[in-house]
Length: 253
Image (cartoon, rainbow, N blue to C red; front, side):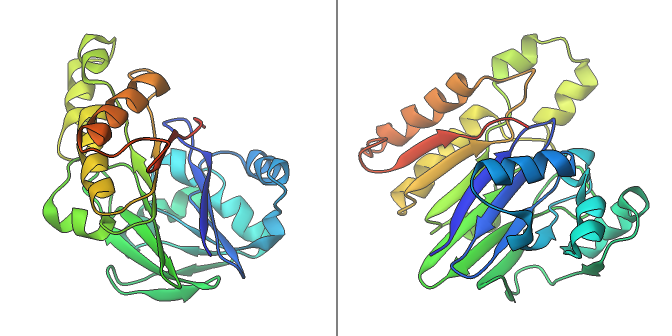
């Protein structure tokens, strides 16, 4: 049995706990170490049960305390080679750094882990699939666009943390400069609510039973807008939210 629990999610910080029957890992550590320790304690967990930190990419909202936690608790840090090169001067010395080959599974904390490439404006960003027994769990945020190759990594997940970053109208009408709006909505930016909703509909049609919408923008989105967009497209496929599957929105960092 494996489970996924977002501790923090959004442009101000990201950290997700993934647990198996015999171990646990953190995906990203983008808020202070103390906040992560407290969040785990509030859920009846302990940082002592964590075996490693897996990094998606080098932006600060994903790596803020990775070095601190690694040194303090002797946790290995897993990252793509490009991500490590981009972040090592920021996070400092770590207990140990481990890289991987995208698409090739490796064993960790009672699970098999598979990293896959994502289109985002970072050095070598990845998402992660986790497998145990017949279960598959996915963490996929910071996605500029979805293509069929990427969708195949998501397809068949029982539970997925999927980015639903911005509402298109809020972004267009918001205070951000035009260049930043273009970056967010571009091929290496983030998924809109509408784009995420369409992906959700495809996933549930293939059997996904739990979707958590994450990495919402504090400036250009609201939980209710993201949830409503996804629910509408899911139920248009004949799947009923709460009855046939679970849909939720992760708390912001």
